[in-house]
Amino acid sequence: MTARRASMIAICALVISWQPDPSAYVLLNRLWPNGNVAMQLQLGTSGTLMDGFPSWGASAGDALAVWNQYTDRVDMIGIQNSTAPTGSLNGQNNVFFSSTVYGMDWDANALAITISWTVGSTVREADVIFNNRLSWNSYRGPNRQPLFDFHRVALHEFGHVLGLGHPNESGQNVVALMNSRVSDLDGLAADDIAGARALYGTSINNGTVAFPPRNDVVDFRNQLETYYRNVLRRGSVTSFVDMEGEVVWGAEYARYYANGCDHATSVARVLSAIDGNSSSVCASAAPGDVRSAPRNFVLDFFFQLQAKYRDGLRRPPVSTVVDTEGVAVWLLEYLRYRVNGCGHADAAQKVFLQLDGRGVQPLCEGTTPPAPTPGSATLTGRWRGVITSAPQSPLEMVLTQTGNQVTGTFAMTGFGNGQTDPAAPGRIDAGRNFEIRFKLQQFSDFIFRGTLAADGASASGGVFQSGFNGDPFTMTRQ
Image 1 (cartoon, rainbow, N blue to C red):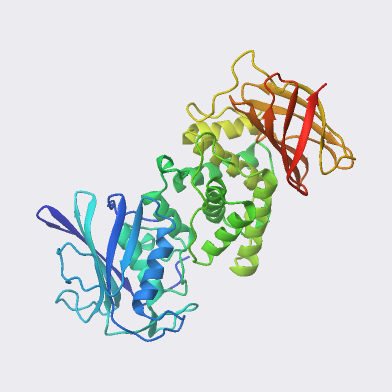
Image 2: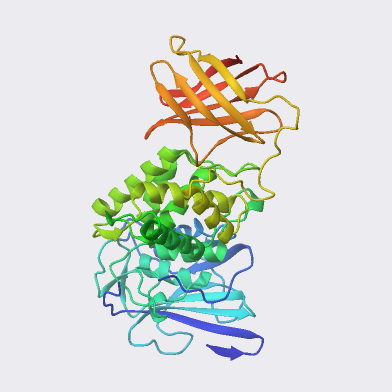
């Protein structure tokens, strides 16, 4: 890296040879301002490529879109067939093939190069040049050297444009497309995605829920491993998902669910992201407490993630003392505290207090909707009612309301007995609107969403899950 007056130039090259280099992303300490980054795609014509893209520009545009799904504060916008002038420090982010690097010879092993100019830590320009002395196509699967895959190399170079470096050149031993040597990996790995989110993660102010940096979540997961081993005295179990996969993809599932996606969509989008595809969140998050997935949903996701790693990625088993249910429950509980205003240390402490049997801890200040005012109607008491689509199965609840949290038990003829989930108590707001989830067994939940009458004598609304989809219910205080 060489100083150039008020600017700084950084050069990152991807090289040809590769040896298996089986930890975390590397940041180059430079960022783009929030907003769009126009990338001038000036790659010429190609004819239809092996993976079906009609041109180099189309393949590059897709690579940009893959990164954009993880960079909520910045979008790289591909300008197809751009006629912008090419050159260093010209105010344009040029992407093109060339036989030289602005007049300098290519290194013998270099496939492509990214040159960035910064002022302080702010990026002002980034050019990506591909070595046109090599043979190129765009394809998936194993590296077919000496025919190189333009798409995976473009993904790598656009990672440099964002501000990611080479993990394997910083003493790290991690699976990542951002490693300095081309490999059989043809899409972003968990480490790459974590790096992008660390640089340009979401902002809660724009309606999208912000999730904590990867290093915080990894630290919590390590603490959880220690707690299970030393306090709970749990023995080793086998998992096909390593700790990094649990952290990155568990957070991605929670992010999709918190931002409006249902369970099936959240799972599908995570599994698709593992395959290197791009997806956006489903909706902007509503103000107030951040939406958390029910425990049975989270556990189902982690079982599907295990299957994906075992059958799809062919990952070998690894040893851990935290079983799949423990990861599902406590990792997502940590994330629930974090996205509701708690710092890393507070969130971890609240989880371990729960593990010590001290009950669900309050969320952090400034994130909880106002509770009903003292003296107003309350859900505390015994309730009886019926779901209109199941009149032959009367229901009964015994509830306790403390502030805006609701706990209790549930019984329904023909369905059994249950109680509120200790990790996710029910909620009621100042408008007397409530949501209470009762857990009957591992994969059987009932969610009641409704409104308490102003006099506190009755409540009504809809019931969801366990075969119900908003079916109306009514109940009265006994």
